[in-house]
Length: 328
Image: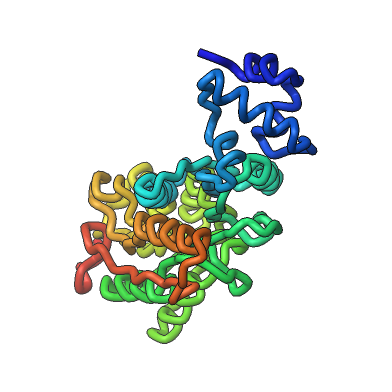
């Protein structure tokens, strides 16, 4: 199988020059490009998608930037993205920043160097590309975003609070998601508004991220600072499951002594015991519709709706007290 070195030898050029041409980095004369193209054809060399895009003048690569792939919500988003784009002949380059701003910048530079046709980004605004590459934001959208797909967090916060209120709560703890995430702030505002409207007092515990390690520490903090808590509204299923685990260690029965509601409806929420009551976010649809919008943007198609808000709903299972189950 011919290699890039074989291409360089046949073209009478250095490997570095061929590499620059294929990756679109640095200057390469038209004469040199013609030699490389001829060598590729003669050797029947199969370059990667980046190289193909160089000669076809149109890339089939899409950059997907995710905040944390270990968060079960985002693999569902990624699956929606990939399912749509594969049907259209595109390949996805994944960038998992692990909530690290510098990693985000590195991935964005890599996307540009690899001549991606577009970017799907689920990270905060400060970590999005400033280039002219078509970009659609997934989930973590804010007012500065022109194109984006996300779920209705205001509706979700209200549904979560209402589900807890049905269980006659006495001592409520609301776990706030990261302040840097706009959607988490909106969700919290809606939860607080609904509880205040019902004149139900609550304590607020802040969580700095959606990472599992942070969710575990936050759960311990809840029980340390509020040992008599009887209701928890969590910002994610990961936080809710961490609360359930901590309740088990403290000998607290769910939902009789402690009711818990999560957010996201990740697959494992159906498998924990008791099964987690949660707010379902359409993660797969967020990814699929975001990819659909980006495809239209790349191909200069008319986009009727630049920001798509998808509805959420309550998945009522076994961790809230239905209609005021008495507290033991």
